[in-house]
Amino acid sequence: MFTIKQHLMAQSIEEGYETLVKNRNNLILGGTAFLRLGNKNINIGIDLSNLELDYIREDENNIEIGPMTTFRSIETNKLLKENFDGIVAESVEEIVGIQLRSVITAGATVASKYGFSDFITALLSLDTHIELYKGGVMSLETYLAEEKVPKDILVRIIIKKDGKKAAFKTMRNSKSDYAILNCAVSNLGGEYRIAVGARPGRAVVKIINNDELMNNIEAVVDEMKFGTNMRASGEYRKMIAKVLIRRCIEEVK
Amino acid sequence: MEIKLKINGISKDITIKEGEYLQSALKRLGFLNVRKGCETGSCGLCTVLLDGKPTLSCSTLAVRGIKKEITTLEGESVEVAKFAEVLTDEGADQCGYCSPGFTLTVIAMKRELESPTTDEIKHYLTGNLCRCTGYMGQLRAVKKYMEVK
Ligand SMILES: Cc1cc2nc3c(=O)[nH]c(=O)nc-3n(C[C@H](O)[C@H](O)[C@H](O)COP(=O)(O)OP(=O)(O)OC[C@H]3O[C@@H](n4cnc5c(N)ncnc54)[C@H](O)[C@@H]3O)c2cc1C
Ligand code: FES
Ligand code: FES
Image 1: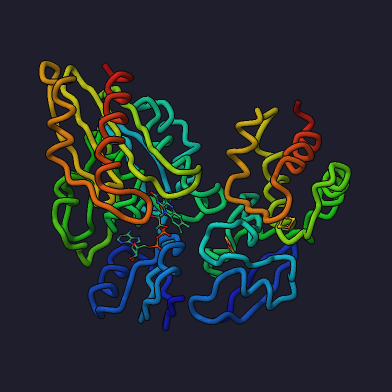
Image 2 (image 1 turned 30 degrees about the vertical axis):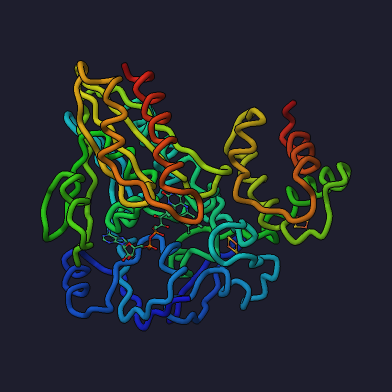
């Protein structure tokens, strides 16, 4: 169980950021469902829930998701169901139950780069950028490639509405358990983005084009590392990955 | 920290510890039906309605309840009595430990979903663990209560 010395209802992102960098033990509070499983001693818990960061909206080019948006909102949102064959909404559907999904937030999941994240895998197969308050806008891929989680605030998730076809698959021992493996593939004009997560490491993406497609699943998977944990062995995951990728490709061809 | 929470339609001033969760605050206020099972976000026992949405009170900070309608089992006595009757009829009440969280979720589901399929019902109720019933009797009761086949 974690402890919080002081709870700060931030009046602006600036105030939140200033507080965050002031002390090593100051921390942003998302839904706090995950934080509570650890035993951090938080000095100031920075609450962003009064800043209207809970939204899913679109403009001409992008769909934007605010960091405090809950997974339940993502799951039921019309925009996310209608774009990218619904995979962003679909990716969170099997995460425990709706009561937990009403608590956990998009920003925390992405900012923390969780390896088990189903949501990150779906986003990674699309043209997704994230915005950090200080770090600015960068592709999700670039953000994930950096080992460290920066002391910064994720303020926006931006998905380009480019008409990609997409598919998402996950393999779980039982519904609502963590994924053994998850996978998402998108296709735009013969360019395929193949994202694989819960390896159990952080999600990775490979881009291949039409001509190299089917024969190349093997090669794509060979380049990815698969690890062993209590849920499955690396070897098993690798076999599952080939199957899930092929199924996704068949849907978006 | 002093906060105001509206619980079952009644505003209450309460003192909470920094970082206190809603479950423990509600329990302290005497809402003993808001139970605690796993404390890890997996079992659904601690469910309350926040603005009508089933939410885990063990994983929601008490301060997040400010300016929201918090509903516990006590606040839904009419629907609770209706559902309890069907549940008992189907022989699906055992130890009853899971009942408060489960019942509140079923009530919210009835308001949110229009003639759901069995799969939609199961999807909505995933995350409500019950150690006793094997779920089949519960599912029969839920379908009766929802008036779907
Ligand atoms: C029982 C359980 C089962 C789960 N199963 C799955 C699963 O199967 N698949 C899956 O994908 N996920 C799963 N999750 C994880 C879930 O999806 C969330 O990722 C997780 O709960 C974190 O969300 P939160 O809002 O609770 O974050 P918090 O616990 O509040 O925060 C987590 C971290 O993110 C930081 N943070 C929060 N907001 C920001 C921000 N805006 N900018 C920068 N940093 C921030 C916090 O400082 C903290 O370090 C599960 C979680 C639980 C509790
Ligand atoms: S006690 Fe809250 S989910 Fe189990
Ligand atoms: S009836 Fe005993 S836990 Fe459900």
